[in-house]
Image (cartoon, rainbow, N blue to C red):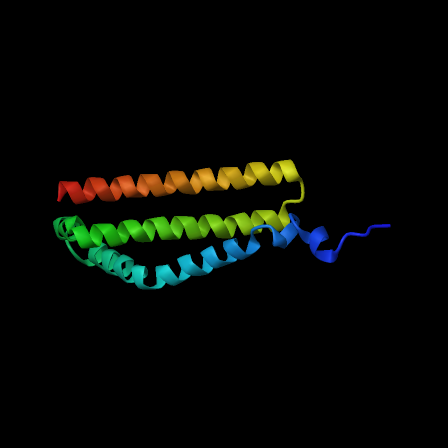
Length: 126
């Protein structure tokens, strides 16, 4: 017979672990992406309708470069959180789950670093 209370059984298991923090981080990054995406839309419009030099000079502006960098960080973090949830929900083997989550985080970190490096290179060239 188990004399532990329901709360003591739940501690350290399942959603009682860090699910609330993960959920809030997804919502915060999603909310941050709403205003930041305006700059992405402007950048895409410039890239498709303006000359290369006009696009580079727009991205060379400190405000625009910083906002695009923030968008890159937010979207990569948000995507990594979302893919992690999918992995945790649908991969049943603990070892494979852990490897997949680490690979996901490594991949999105590499994407963020590469994108930030590209923005830095473009903004310094302009």
